[in-house]
Image (cartoon, rainbow, N blue to C red; front, side):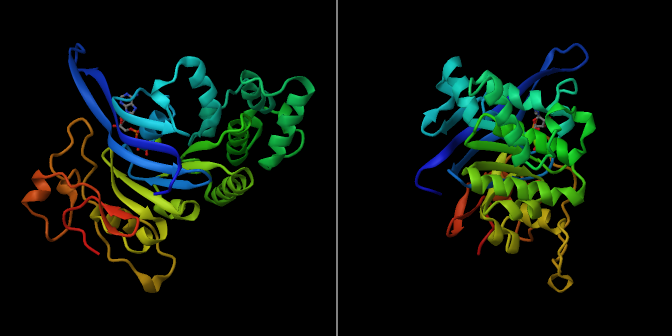
Amino acid sequence: MTATPLVEVRDLVTHFTHRVGLFGTRREVVQAVNGVSLDVAARETLGLVGESGCGKTTLGRTILRLVARTSGEVRFDGQDVFALDLAALRRMRRRMQIIFQDPDGSLNPRLSIGRAVREGIEVHRLARGAEADGRVEALLAEVGLPAGSAARYPHEFSGGQRQRACIARALAVEPEFIVCDEPVSALDVSVQAQVLNLLLDLQARRGLSYLFISHDLAVVRHVAPRVAVMYLGRIVEHGPSDGIYQRPLHPYTQALLTAVPVPDPKTKRARVVLAGDPPSPVNPPGGCPFHPRCQHPGKNESCRTVRPELRELAPGHQVACHLADR
Ligand SMILES: Nc1ncnc2c1ncn2[C@@H]1O[C@H](COP(=O)(O)OP(=O)(O)OP(=O)(O)O)[C@@H](O)[C@H]1O
Ligand SMILES: [Mg+2]
């Protein structure tokens, strides 16, 4: 943990209630985020990994107040994000942006790339007229789009180029913190590395902070020195990416990692099978939320009944498992 984090999340809980059943008479509570605490320092990237449905996007969106929280706290640069009035929230929104997995769905097909990027500049009154045009051109060049891109429409670009346009649009308002929600998952493998390297260059040049969401620990390790592993709305392991990648301590992280191809055939990982689908966040298991799928040979009664808290097992490396040891 760092001395003065830019983003501080404390015990954040986001539950969704929706009606189910034939007549919509029954209510169901989806416990998407279930008590998450984390920090992101200025100029730092925190990686966030976990299987589909574990609550990564909901966590990112709740931090930006795009989704209502149920309880808990988020501070951005010391300010309580949930206490801001609408005018203050609008000013805060300029400083915190989000990039989505699907560049197609997040660009308006009827808006030229130039107009899409210009929108934020105008909304936040950062520039107008020729000065705004100049900023748009400079941003498109900065993300590596060819000259003349401003007048073109989303369908005239490749997937990788569209994601570059989305990055330019996020940068247009000069944010300090960006939630990158699986920004390369929808892209062809050949362009994934280019877009990741662009994000790294921009971070170095502009001093950005990222919360980098992915289901792939290998991708996260490339961009984030520190990673949090999420399972059913909770952080179950948190620490240095290299350490966790080389020696995961939580049985869930161990299982996740066996799904990652190992480049060197000599360092084969023992295959741990992640049995079954993740349980439903509507009715999460008691005790350790991972216990029904856990393959640890020492699994015992407390795993079924007592929820493990995060414990620090190595410097800066925390694990929520009764059985994990160094
Ligand atoms: N607006 C919503 N209303 C009701 N339930 C929701 C809503 N948004 C998300 N959920 C539910 O919350 C849980 C967490 O979803 P979320 O999208 O945060 O997961 P995720 O980790 O981002 O998954 P993925 O890797 O597939 O993107 C899921 O069970 C999902 O169905
Ligand atoms: Mg998601």
